[in-house]
Image (cartoon, rainbow, N blue to C red; front, side):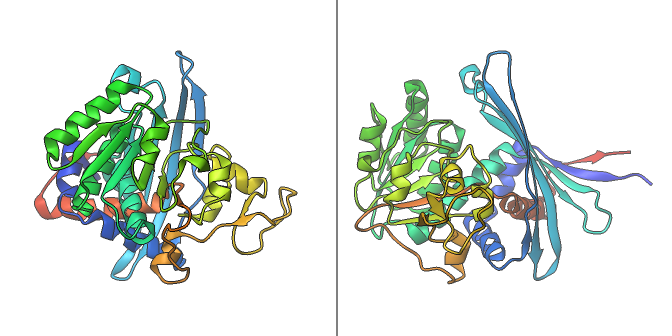
Length: 349
């Protein structure tokens, strides 16, 4: 008996995503997560340094999401990255995602995961902005202007059509100018300004999104105007005092963030400067008396924790990136592909 699976390249993924409400799907899975209806095993992490001395890594992220109408979605995302890729005209990260057949456990669909992963991340930002962002805003700043920022901008303008201004900054001015040109071409009603420095960019808008590859912090609390919402998407842009003085800090999964010392918030949690809002173990020898987290975005969505919008200070959304969001989104993409006859059938044997 031969076995086959459906392969979706980027073009097919993009076509399917146009028929999926990615924010609604992301919110659905976040609610499932808050209700304890997902499986989220520890990720596999393999780091190395390439011939240019650049940091590289491979992540293998498994997840399962319960469904009211059928068997749980189960799958994996393998996403690899090299920090030297952008200098060669390549996207920093790329990979593959799979869903598994619930009965045979065989792969059912294989999809290009770079754009899917970026869309998942951007959708999380949009959901967090919808529930935790300022009451009134019309401008956003993006620090880091690669592919992830581009996906964010496209979804931002579609989700919040009242956006009139976008401010950009990148350590490579060419990337910022390239993104600015793309925005002007695709969204001519949006005014775009490339800022000469990160501080000017942060001060220019009440919504700040960090989509960089920075591994050292540079953004202090003093740069953040009261009333600012920060989507801290990347690893380490914010300095510790930004978290300690925040009006509220929300994450996607407490354990995932705490277990990752490469993230500034993970380090702070291990050191006891930031704690969950419930008593934690003392496995690392720290007395859990630091600033408590305000909860997860999923807890906000199900009403278990109150939403906090920035007023007298700033609010931080700091996701780790959960595989269950990729699995849920790929499930919706797969359904769209089947309905429209998209993709190529691959014969395994």
